[in-house]
Length: 462
Image (cartoon, rainbow, N blue to C red; front, side):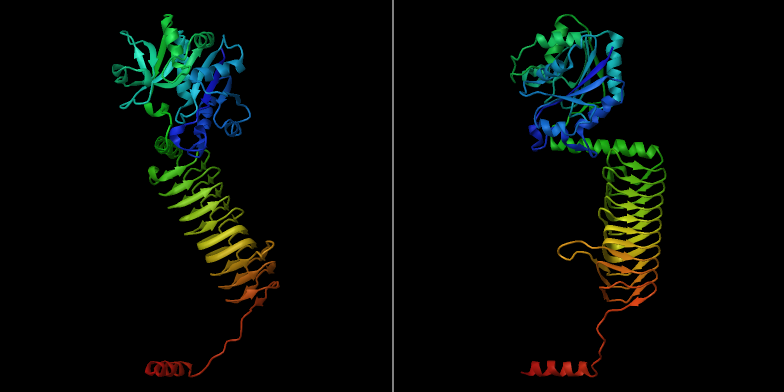
């Protein structure tokens, strides 16, 4: 018996107060919808169909190739959405249909497997996830009979005062016998406060036919739907803890999990150390034994084995094995640091490669440049790479020594073992092993200080 997965993702999410479709808001660097898709993928279920509506094209553009979508052109409720999906799926009479909500990013594949297993084991017409919460406001309430069996779900707007006091809520996640789901959808109406076809009414229909229903009570945190910015922030807090615990169990040292922010696809090597204030965004990899933080933001970057990065920002950059970055460095896209190289305090690199052992210790900007092995770039050095029309490259050779406050006007090459004098503006290539100095001749004016003091005295007397 195949399991067909239907994910409801057509709602607007007005409480988010955002132009972005609700299911595309991010939790740990990944959309809520993709967390739900991943949960379904972590099972042996047959296929996944996403029901789209509000922002349909935007949502469809994010879907993996192996996930199909169907458009709910007119949003007439959850029951209607599932019916639209079944029209595309065709005959599901011999299948199990698993219905999920696209705004439950903390849901796990293990829980979904348990739900389907419960349906099969009990032979129920439907099995649903439930949870107990202190404040059930806004949720459908689970109705049980005197034998504690699930017999229905009542939406809050249709509930009586007594029913609103029930703390067991519907998590909006169901497993149905396909044939009975089809029958249920064909026999529900929209005579309710919202004027919509409720999927929950299918539960009432099945119960009314004396068909058995099963409820799997799980932790409320896992099934929590995200409907507001506040709830989105809470989901991020929870997921941050989940991810941090997973990495700590793999041998990563984290100083304070509540102050480390990890995207879902981040990779971290055993023995790495993450200090407070570290933000590792999507596409970032940290090598074994690397030390990151305090206060590092890295996006799409690679931090090599045993490297050290602190108080710095990295965007699409590569830090080689044993290299050092910071404090207060900015590595922009295309920055590549070779093994045991160094980028120090208040240094900015863009589209620049440092070879092994090269150093840019402080107060410099290098753009569109290459720095050779063991070269040293003095404080205040700038590659003048833009002439107002086009960018040009600077090539600094092996073991070159760039004096402090050197302006390198690209295109220009500084040869191997070459030296530039401090305060120089270099506009021509410097041959290997040569010294290039470009300064005005220094002049001394004897007695200048006493004459200046005399002028000030006379001015005060007038």
